Image (cartoon, rainbow, N blue to C red; front, side, top):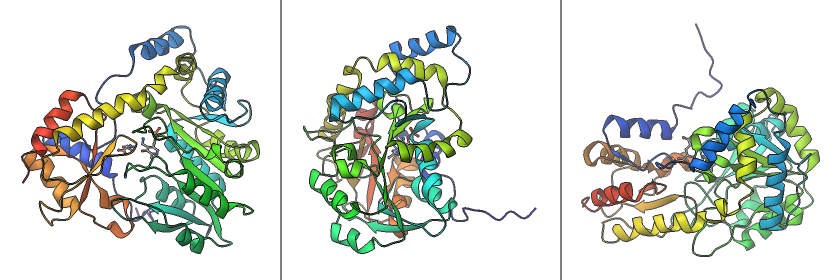
Length: 381
Ligand code: PMP
Ligand code: GLN
């Protein structure tokens, strides 16, 4: 049978590949971004309770209203920003589904979508499946700063969307207030939609603050925010998240959402609504993850890798150019097989696989795992 692929250049994701390689070689796995500790028992109990109460049939299409109300309260509390729970918030099967649905709902053939590289891997295939054109803007290691003049030069009448991701995966950097003001200035008066992927909003360190698009009134009008409970509450396998946008954008989103997934997992939504009533559950995250970052970095301070401490997310970049000039994919594979430590090569997120000789390590791991990883990294000369 002849299959004409819609994604001829796409293989298996690097996360699947590296985790499989880590398992095959019994390596310490700091590659794919997921915690190796348990989600809060209280949250698991709330899910069980909801199941035992019989909440096992379809949830409402936009999500359980009490959960949307709690999310709305969170936006009010953290950003003094109002999203109407009835019309401006939808619960999704993870941020991935929200992102795919947003792109499918708005990107037409030949529309241009600006992507900052390195970029998380799910944006580009979704744009290509919808016959949009990716307009890449490559950022440079180690600071990954945006040149807004360059962005201005790429915006034209075909620009349909700009994807931003702050805190950024994989670089662990954040957009400043000035960055957001530039984005607001450049999109004002246009029909450009901003897809703001904010899944790491609660993982931000050294007393810096998250610059959500909802803090900027003109930006908010044209933006979707995507979020992931999997990231926030250490249960990436539950695949549940949400998105927010002004109602006229959300109505268009929902046209696709209802046929893409219809609705997300019901008992988990009911449990999350209760769990979100305690804001400490997310407010304590910066401290929790900063301790992990600091532990990891203090243990490898004498290793042969160079680094700038991650500002946000749960990823730390390590520059290995003092060790070898091998390309990053080969080096990541060799580290996994020979040294038993798995990471993600950064080039897979860059335009034309640009290789800065940098690997990404996930520090959402038990202290024991971080110590084992550091002991290995310290031996690599
Ligand atoms: N965006 C970014 C930047 C991510 O790192 C991830 C990975 N979890 C996602 C979106 C997808 O989130 P989810 O697992 O909720 O689909
Ligand atoms: N977001 C996770 C990461 O960056 C991986 C998610 C996935 O495997 N698709 O590692």
